[in-house]
Structure formats: C-alpha cells, structure tokens
Length: 615
Image 1 (cartoon, rainbow, N blue to C red):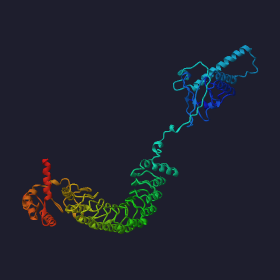
Image 2 (image 1 turned 180 degrees about the horizontal axis):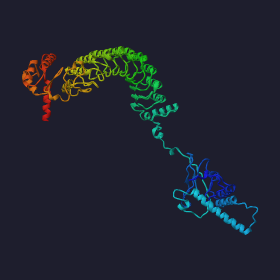
Image 3 (image 1 turned 90 degrees about the vertical axis):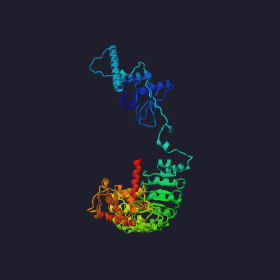
Image 4 (image 1 turned 60 degrees about the horizontal axis):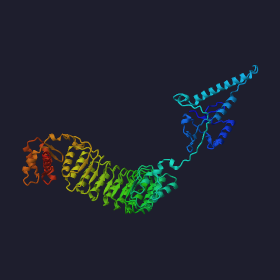
C-alpha cells in the first residue's frame, strides 16, 4: 500500500474521501480547525499529524464497518499511531476548490470569447470530468490490491465526511516486555547471597552467570567449559569468600588464566569449607603456580586439587615440591598434562617420598624420563601412604620401569598403578611379574601400549595365577599382542577368581619373541581339536578322560601326581604327543610345584561343565 506520508504534490491531486498528510493547503487547515471547534471530542490538528519519518496506513474497510481506531505500522518502538478516517463534506469541498484552482486552463488570445452561459456550462462539465478522472486515478493508486480495485472489493458510501487522523501516544510499562531476565535473575531479597552476587555483578558491569545463580546454594557446583571470563570468576570468588555451604567447585575448561586463578586463590585463603577445587584446562602459567602454592600455606580445607591440562613447567617444580613437603591436608593432586621434564621429576621425587598424607597422585602425560623417572619411582617406594599412582605416557623407558618394579615389590599400600605408554620392555615385564608374586595389595595394574611382547604378558598372568595372596582384579594390557598360552592362563585365573578381568591386544597363533621362532602355531579359537597341548609353562588337557585316569593314580586324593605318573597316564590314554617336549615340560612343572603336578584346576573345570549340563 502506498503511504500518504510519502506522496508528494497532494494539493494538486485531491482524492475523494482521504486526506493527504504531508502538504495541507492553508484554506484546508482553516476548514479542519473550524470542524474541530464544532466537535469538542476532536483533538487539535497538531496532535493529529504523524511524527516525521512515520507512515500512516489507510484502511480499506468501509466506514460503516471500521472500528474507531486502526493501528498503523511505524518504525518508532515506543509510540503506536492510530488513524481514524471519517468522510466530511467540507474537506471534499475544499479539495474541489483546490482542484478547480489548479485545473483552470488559459485560453489563447486569438480565440473569441464565448457567451457567458455556455462558458459556465462548459466549465462545470470540465470540473466534473476532472473530478471523476482524479477519483479513478486515486482508487487505482490506493485501492488496487491482490483481488482488484477497491471499488470492486468493498462497499462504498454516498455520505460525505471529513477524513480525520488521530495520533495517540500509548505509554508502555514493564509488563509489556517479556524477557528471560525476569525468570533468570529474580530479585530474591530473602536470599542475601544472591543479592550480594547481583550487587557485585552490577559493580563490575557484567551479566550474572545464570547457572551459578541457580546453584549458588548447592554443595557441589560444576561449571566446566562455561566460557567464564576473569571478571565473572572474580565475581564468583567474591561471593564464595564467605560462603559455608559450597564444598566442591569445578571451573575447569574456562580459560580463566592467571587473573581468574588469582581471584580463586584469594577466595580460598579465607574459605576453608571448600574441600575440592578443579582448575584444569584453564591456561594457567607459572604465575598461577605461585598463587596456588602461597594459598596452600594458609588454607586448611582443600583435600583434592586438579591442575591438569595447564602450562606448568620445571621452573615451578621446586614450589610444588615445597607445597608437598609442608602439606598437612591435601590428599589428591592431579598435575597431569603439563610440561614437567626430567628436571622437575628429580625435584618432585623426594617431595613425594616425604609426604605422608597424599593418597592419589597423577603425573600422567608429562615428560618425566631418565633420572626424573628414577627419582619419581624412588619417591613412590618411600611413600608408605600412596594408594593410587598414575604415571602413564611419560616415556620412563627400561631404567624407569625397573625402578618402578622395585618400588612395587616393597610397597604395601598401593592399590592402583598406571604405567601405560612408557616404553617398557620385556625385562620390565619380568621384573613386574616378580613383584606381583609377592605383592598382596595391588588390585589394578595398567601396562598397555608398551613393548613387553607376548612373553611379558604371559609372565604377568602366570605370576598372578601362581600367587596365592594376589588381590589383582584388573590387568590392562591394551594393544599388547597375546597368544594361546596367555588365554589359557587367564581361564585358570578366572576359575579361582571369577571377577578377574583382563584387557589385551590381538590374539596371535604364536608369540612375537625370538624364542618363538620355529614354534608350532596354535589357533586360539580352535584349540579343542587336540587332546593335549604342551606349552612353554603349561600342559593343556582338552580330553577330560585324562582327569579320570589321573584320579586313579592320586591315592592321597590331593589332586596331584608325580611326573612319572602323569606320563604313564598319557600313555594309557593313547593320545599322540611329543615325548621329549612333554618330559621337559613335566619336569619344569614339577619343579615349580614341589615335585608334583597339580591337576585340580582341570578337575574343577570338569565338575563345573557337568553341573552346567545337568542344569
């Protein structure tokens, strides 16, 4: 629709029944003023004109069906302009006079004057034709829509009326606005903590964090990866400074940097009720390490501190060492995924050994190699309180691995040890196996992603199987290839410990060491075809008839026989086997078992199978 406020030349193009808004003739204005004085309910003309750069919409609805006020689409958000159109004969008469004035034609001088009567008649017909043409033009310009001209779509009225425009200013209140801020940040005067937080945010000119506001009175607040700025962290720290209900605060992954860490440390110097603090992945540098170590001199509440994924290096190793030596409350420390090198390891090792309160230590994903790895291993050996130690992906190598195995053999409290991805070799696996044979506390051992070979894997599970006091629950050998003998030993362990779990790499048909060259391959998943399989450390019996024969030779009913009786039972069974290889394996097994060969595991397996078949 064409807006009247945008149309120029109003006085030269009168339209019946409408008022041009941008230009009004003086005579037209006087007529409208006289009409206003006659009608007390009409406002002044100045109040009926729209503001500059606004648009007044004209209704296409017949006057008889129009409401009193019609809303107008404008750009100003705070005003609503409403137009009311009424026909008036006086405005039509004014438009006619304007049209007559603008439409007078000048006759040529050489033409003869016409008689006065004929002149008036021709002049009236001319005005009538001009009025009809102007009306048709206006209807085509303003009244034509999608469905055709205005005259075809709406009813018309023969009554003359004056078009009046009324401008009404409506004041909007706060109830007219619907925003998230009303529900997100209620003004709860009964909660002094929230009120304090609002005041601090207003003072710092920041927006309150909605998640923190909802959980401000919880015991555990976790805001990981919330993209908090240092100022937002400062506001949170100022609120929590005097709070006694928050026990756990985790703001990891927010990149708060050193400024945010400083605010947290100032808060923790005065708040001893927070027992766990998570500051991982926050781009903290050595400057933040100084703040943290200074804070621990006065804080007596923090029991768990997570500083993983930051940028600490050897320059602050001595400060962390001093913190560990003087620590009286911290029980869990995570310094993984930082930049500590062998220099830092040499400094942190003695501090770990002197600490008698630390339960969990995580130094994974650093570069603690060579002398740094050896120093860490010695510190673990001297620490008689440590329960969980994670040292994965540090590149300990053979020297560091052997030192860890030595520490494990003497440790009496360690429950979990993670040395994955440390370039450990077969000698380290054999030394670890020796430690496992005497250790009766370790429950979880992770040695995956190392070069211990299939022989090292067999040595580990064999030590667990032979240890009567082993408490091992999980052996993680991720990506370490194994062979059939390893799988067989694991089955024997599960007979004694049904809850034992093992994670390993691909199962091969033969081992991957030099001693396995020329060894007969065994398909791990088709092993039941052969009645007796002679392995390096075990003799696998797949024919349960041999158990019945061995029981006849077991007079004392101890589920064990001598090497000679075992060979005689195999001859009686009449199954093919390598006699020389069998004699060598039997003698080795008898040596490990005090001169006797124990077949109780096979007997238990037979009984379990019979029970399952009956069920």
